[in-house]
Image (cartoon, rainbow, N blue to C red; front, side, top):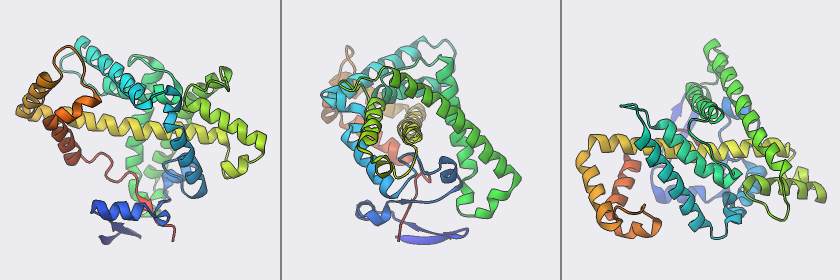
Length: 315
């Protein structure tokens, strides 16, 4: 445990896994740092909120298994969806005519479709203009967000013209993404069947109706607009699921390119355990020690979100 000053803020760093688990198991550590980005979001969602709203939303999302509750055997269904998207990914790469080419859009689409199938029962093609625009806005939002990072520690910087313009651009990106998300919500409203909720959006809409019937909307959503909350929850699940996986996969490809001997060993192990006629599955993992070790080494070497989700204590 060590601490240092970053601008006007005292930052405390925990580096030991046992200490981190111990700290984050306590409610006092569940707060979020208030930044310029927090004010843009306006206290909605799950990633950047705290207090009672965070507790309520976390409990609900866990009860719904983030949308997998209605799939029967969630783990098997999840593995099936992932396998479908892996097949799409491999086929799309095989059919790619450009050489060299950037794998990010295809990776984006395959990973996004797993998340989309869980939370909104839909999938996209990587050439779909609407999807391409949504993912562009997502990447642009992350890029702009990084440019405002220093304002959390040196607040006076937010008054600089360049930073003010960046904040306005983030707001414009977010507004356009919310329009896309609201279109999905409206589609779900039109086809909603209370006896057969299909995914997380359906479950959330039913929870909103239930809260209105009981008369405790303000209590459940702590005074916030439930529909705006649903919009931000969808964006939060996307950012947590897609950006982290995409970045990890891109690092994995890069490390494999620079370490061909590791790539050959992984391929040899997959060939001997899985064979050429099917995709790997979860049950194979116990027999793939070298492949597992390689995945862990990728994650150890490539920090995916080094400064993205800092915690704050509430006392």
